[in-house]
Length: 147
Image (tube, helix red, strand yellow):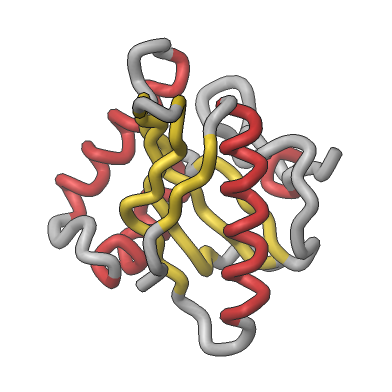
């Protein structure tokens, strides 16, 4: 199992700690996991770059709704971030599991990658994390092109 460094460092989502995407094989220079409440403001520049949000207050409300909905069986959206070894967010995506005629599909309508140093590494880590999430949710991954 790949351990999420942020969980070891005490960065928490609620009382249970950051939730790693277990069992994934990815570039170990990056940590891919569900966004946590403390990461909401840090992810705002990525959200504006991806045209997800333009207002910080609305962004906070949007993220908190999705993050708090993880424990509700009728909620299927997630916000996933990719952080480098220093904790800087390099990618953000929104996912949702959709039921189709072919079965469940992990849809990724928005994906933003923001780095000039290692775009391929970030893209690969995010893809591997999404593949792991699709497996965990029993769905097939369907991605859009990253911004």
